Length: 299
Ligand code: AMP
Image: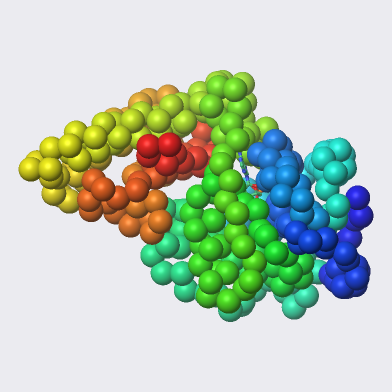
């Protein structure tokens, strides 16, 4: 496994790299690696790609400075995990390497509603920073495939837009969320959960499953009974009933719920027809730790 900390040294190496017949697979991360991250790398290796992983805690995507300060850094363990997995290249740049002319006043892409709703609404500027760093990393590494997790559902939709807007040749591969045995989505932030909060955190996944199951039932009933097709308004009311019930249960357990909503799985717009493919998404804080998760309806 080769380690690079400067853009120059990495680019020099990539110029002469024999990518093999399959190409280069890139897994960008912010470190504190867990099995979720490693599953992306594993998928890249299974495809026979040369693999590159980056570890960079991107300051421009943190709207809350405290969250940035508290972000776990476990570089030595991360490198040991990547080495054990057979990762070929690791990029560990400094902030100066990625943002040579500073982190402020960067040109941003307007992703419209996709980036202003849900996470975009609750974490202003987050997606601008995320898109900045992903674009810079893609320009540096020039991979054939980019591996991302569906855990960050809205993020991977925006990255797909970014690739299309910028006409980049890279193919985005979005992979399922890896979960702990009890269902909690793996996240670098989970290590910050106290014992009680960790026990309660599983409720997020349970409530997502509850809402998704209710919507699935609604879909089956209404698709069968064509004559009783649901109007957009009553669909919103029905879904609202399920999400409200879930939110109340979470709040009773001590969660501060930022959102829990069912949206169109491609556009994140509000559902208008029972025939749409939907995703249920949640963001909530417990014990001062902000967690996100989602479940695609019918999966
Ligand atoms: P992060 O280090 O949190 O920026 O995540 C780096 C990549 O790993 C992103 O594409 C995430 O979506 C993905 N990822 C994070 N957690 C998981 C998980 N539990 N399962 C699958 N992928 C994940």
